[in-house]
Image 1 (cartoon, rainbow over the protein chains, first blue to last red):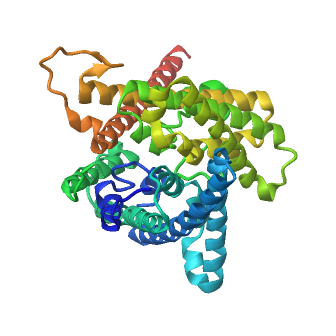
Image 2 (tube, chains in turn cyan, yellow; image 1 turned 180 degrees about the vertical axis):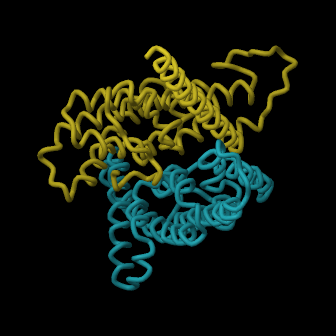
Length: 196
Length: 227
């Protein structure tokens, strides 16, 4: 059993160990989909939804796997849960709000290959979180992802207009921007009782 | 282009020689910019970077081979799910293998071994190559791509370890008075050193292209004089 307080779990996953800028998860979509603010925040919100649902489901699945002594199936079960949650989200959004569905387009199925989504169930298992702690952890981690996406996309929209050497355009520039953002997030390391 | 590639700008793939292609021409990190999470997270020392590269190579080799074997049996609608199940199985094997070989490396790589499942290089190769080609080229492609990935990771790990800790493979390079540039071991250093590698790679390729164009112009001029 893990006795970390909920507020500490939240702060830790949201700012101190931000999933994108400090633990390097979900890099592909972070670098690939952050060119525009409108896509970035939509992607962030759908990731929050998928991570929260799949984290709760994986918590239940892990209890069953432990009960029948089949822990070696954990990874395969988690990835299947994630793939079906993404499919479910897709169907739900399609039915409830066709407009949003059209705007999100191909980004929805891409969430399956986002490693941040797989990392949340893996981390909550290795840290022995209970159901409430897992849920808070999932919301904080995905919220941190959304925050990083939005921040980078806003900076990238500004750099669209500035004069940049043609050599550095594209991924290299994005990486330098991400590095500066990550430097800023290191400042949060002192928050909370245990900085690490 | 494959619909599941998680980086929209992944370049078009030519498949001349699958092995060299993966190792150099279509290097997954420096050219295609895929699989960024382990590239940035695990490269704070040469040893870890190389181990991660080898683990990924093994997974790519197995999954490419298996996927190529079942490519004619699996219906098109469920192919992605099948690929993911095959990849997850190979990764579980690697997870237990690394734990059996070296518990130190296993602890250092931590959660990033199971996360190989979500590495986009593997699904990208499955979709773009292994799902369409016979077994032997598919395995060669997996091997080449994996070694290209390991090569890129080791390059990045070398820069970060030499600057950030003053050591290479744990051997001290600059003597006791060296003040390590710790920033390079921390997350920002990962981003910035990858940016530097990408920049130098682009610069080098642009130069090579210009030189090629110049030599063509010279050849034409010489040809005109001869005639």
